[in-house]
Every structure is written in C-alpha cells, then in structure tokens.
Image (cartoon, rainbow, N blue to C red; front, side, top):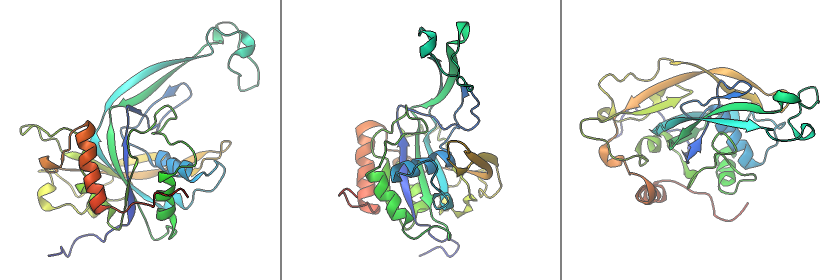
Length: 284
C-alpha cells in the first residue's frame, strides 16, 4: 500500500563519488586550500559542465536548477599536504606575480597547504525542479558516460575511481536511500547512522519509519549556510552566493552495507542494472 504522506518522486541522476583522494574547496584562500566534509554544489555543477564540454564563460543557469542531496557512505580521513612551487629554478622560470614580474631571492619558492579527504565515498542525487529544462537529465547522463573533458573529484589531481554515473531514475531519492553502501557492515554495538546533506529540506526523503534514528529530526530545520551556489565560472569574474544547508541522519539496514573493493562493486552493479536506467553505450 502506498503511503499517502510520501513526498512526490523526484526524477534525477545518481552519482558515485569515491577515489583515493577528493577535495571540495569551500573556504580556500590563496595558499590555504581546504575541503568541505562532503561534495559541494559548485563542484558538482562544475563536474556536469566539464562533462558537457562547456567553457568557463558559458552560462550554467540550467545546471543550477538541479537540487543536490548527498549521502555520506564513508566520511574519509582528512589529509593535509604541503606543496612547493618554483623551488630550485632560475628566476626567469619561477612563478609570475600578479604584476607580471618574476620573483627573486627567497620568494621564488611558494608554499601551499592543501587538504584532502582520503578514502571517502559519497552517493549523490541531482534531482530536477520545475525550472529544469526537459532534456537536461538525459544530456547530463550521456555526457557523464562520454565526458568531453576528464572529470575529477573537486581538484584535477583527484580522478574518480570506478563508475561515476550510477544511472537515472524517476524516483532518485528513493534509490539514494536504498543503494548499497560503500562501507563495511557496522558493529552491532556501534551502528552509526548515515548522514544526508541537501540544499533543500530533507523531510522529502522517502525514508521508512524504521530507518529514522532515536533523535532524528525531519531535516527541515536549516543547519546553516554554505557559499557554494555558483553564478558564473568565468575565469575573470567567478562568483558564488550562499545557500541554505539541511542535514539528516538515518539508520539504514546492516544488510545494505556492501563492504569494500570488488564485492561492493558487484553488489552495486546488480542493484543499478535492476533498478536504474542507463544511457546508451554508443558515443554521442
């Protein structure tokens, strides 16, 4: 029997975001490059634009109509890395300053600190709104299968591991809850709930009652703001604006945890083949 209070299904695409390293810059400033604890809207809209072959100065208004909901399968381990640029080179080969000059003396070597998430895994749903163009989901899914340019998880040094596009669905949030989880089964005494993050209220998650946690809220109370809504990626006038963030945690069944490595990929493939729609395999 259908639940009369169940939110209306939302069509969307489902992504698997995992790799040795990923980094989702949120507050980066000059030589300090941070990472958010989950993929940001700006990064995933940029990922779609990259797959579609859009240049940075091209509009992204259609992509910005999509709603993003993230499931954290494995939060990963923060890793802070020190980078040097320009060391050991003659002055004429060092980094150029903003004024177009070359650095001299002790300033020729630049130090940057960059933070990554190691061994993290996320499942993401990008769902439509009434403003989303009709063909956008189909075009985006085909582009993710045959991207125009290489795709990466926040930074170019972080390529995705394994399949990125899981498929499309007319009820993407249902599958966001039920897709196999890329993590080992939890201990019976330490069953940590799975975190969901979205740019829209999370009462719309079609979660069965037995999945809610003891202190679970409906996810409709804003948890703060994140400055990751891109207005343009133009290299000379790149700009973002703040958007509201919502969080919710659910206890998902232990049998849904598919482990790591090959067993997890086999379980994931069996689920997506049965339940999700995939673009045609021929190149666009």
